[in-house]
Image 1 (cartoon, one colour):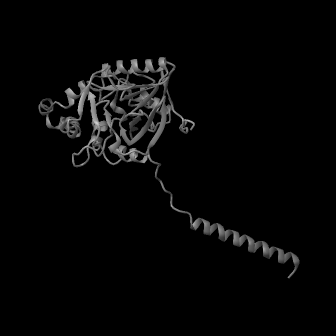
Image 2 (cartoon, helix red, strand yellow; image 1 turned 45 degrees about the horizontal axis):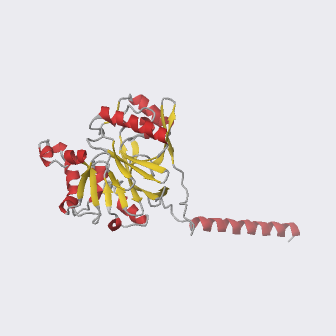
Image 3 (cartoon, one colour; image 1 turned 30 degrees about the horizontal axis):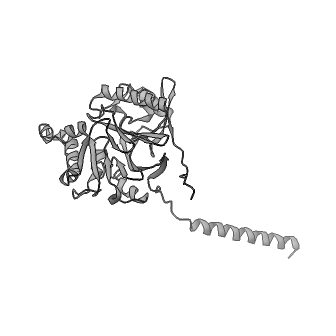
Length: 328
């Protein structure tokens, strides 16, 4: 065999071995995992540790938005690359606040009330390093099922057995009124029933107490009146050192539409005109005061700032960053 033939033979062998190695590597490639990381995100507001907890997502039909033509709604969503062909994917978030003296949960998620894509607050709370028994206070922005059902388990027992449950007097008077709910047609009672069943174990244990707007519920946490979405919808302003955050519940449902035009309401609003007035005031205040905002239906983790943009507003989401730790 000539030298040239010998060289070609060695090259061919090397190529064959290499190809076999590549084929073996591909054969051993694991299946795609197609799972996300646990849904929690942490930041500091002054000395307060705030952990966003993802409950999951639901899909809302764009026809639920009121006060804007569907063509215009879709144009706003398309401009932000929000796929609404099969409805708008909408996050449900809760927030855990460690003040140093208290462990406070704001809203509790949906549990099993709205299907398998929701109900993850408890497991994400555990994944974030805490357990339900450590929560001593629960603050409800309002008593709609996607916020309240996670208070109780499938047996009707309290998921947070050591927590004092607080909700606004306005929402308690409305949603927990059994006479009001029984006077409704049966097909309209569901939201009332779910709220009453979720709150019941805390009432029975003597650990439920309403609050009024303006009440300082804990040191540095003040309830604000943001009614309109529900009769007693509340938000919570956290202030620590020079930092502040408003946990605003359901002030905004569709960031792709309602920042551009705050006058757009949603079918779930109990008083749409008041909900619009509230949203306009809250957005204006967030721009002026430059405080953080945490929203139950903003894209997870639901935390960011608001700035003015053209005739409306724009959402600036927080960036992922490590927690700054005190030097030892």
